[in-house]
Image 1 (cartoon, rainbow, N blue to C red):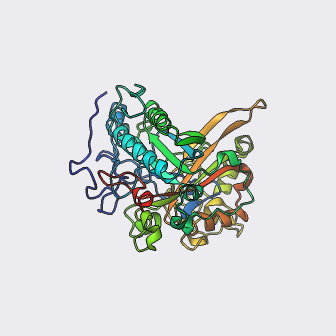
Image 2 (cartoon, rainbow, N blue to C red):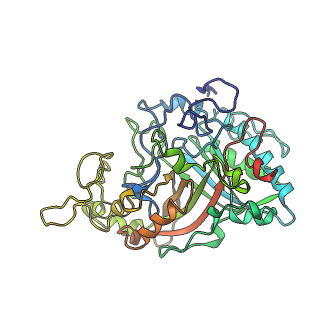
Image 3 (cartoon, rainbow, N blue to C red):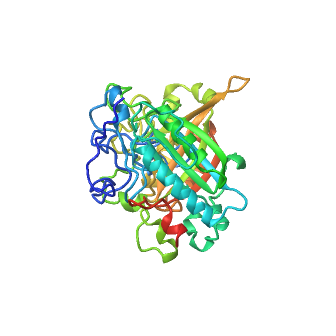
Length: 438
């Protein structure tokens, strides 16, 4: 397959328009993938216990679907103002992996690791072989183009103590509160380092995962790893908002890059205290493995499912009428005098109007990890949301959902993590350099 690249030519750093603001950012994708359309998660903004209509617009594909033969040719940029994988359109395959630094590894080893990881990620995202100090390229992705591969790096709360950088740990990394729907497995939560991999080809995504694991060498070991998927580009007759494993339209009401307040909602601004200046242009990722109790959910009638969510299952439109993008009329009542969108509907409780405008960019992957002996599927959502401050995004919305969301009986939060994702690296730099060389 050709390694055709539709990316603008320039100096390889931050061409205008890549971050949706004209400033240039690593979330840029090729011209054939215009930012817009359907986003990342949410039947009515289904956040599955996290953000509903209060959040996130993950950039989606343009008005003309790409032929499957062109999927491999699209390329996201590694260098830029923001890291790729935040506003990048949803990809068909994803891997999430957390690492812990090994005993004896500190700031020096972490810096060397981030330098190696950044170099190999830049090569892989350009569709080039992953030759490195850890050996020759495995050949897993031979014949494939970049396939919209993105590699995104973040730091967990424990990273700072292990590297002697506690004074540079921002308050936004304080631990998340406990919620009533939490059934968290500590072994599959948190971590010193976090990597998000996404691609439109499964072999390209696995190639990146395997390469980064090898490149960790003796500096870090895998703490946990999860695999996810979304609809493949070109699988529908026109670009559409994705559906989750409950069959719900999942991506409505995400903030859009063209909105005037998008940047300030999603990315950390300048002007923070000097100790946290390394996060300028970065974002905070909340990661939750949310199991869907599909057997229970599928016993409901479609009408009852729509009452739980507050939106029509067929097209994602609010029960108050209109189309998917129509604003919900939370005051509309039915013939019985009751609200058309029930008081405990997920869409109502998680809406910006009910959460002081709290917003996050939801960009998840679905997952399926097998079927138990009793036939119960271990399946659900690898929920990922992005915001400038989780204490003004995810946390207030989740607290509201925790107090009476009709969706809560059908989901279970089984793993959790919060990571500081620094801004993108300029040409010649590595991700996290401003922190590790502070």
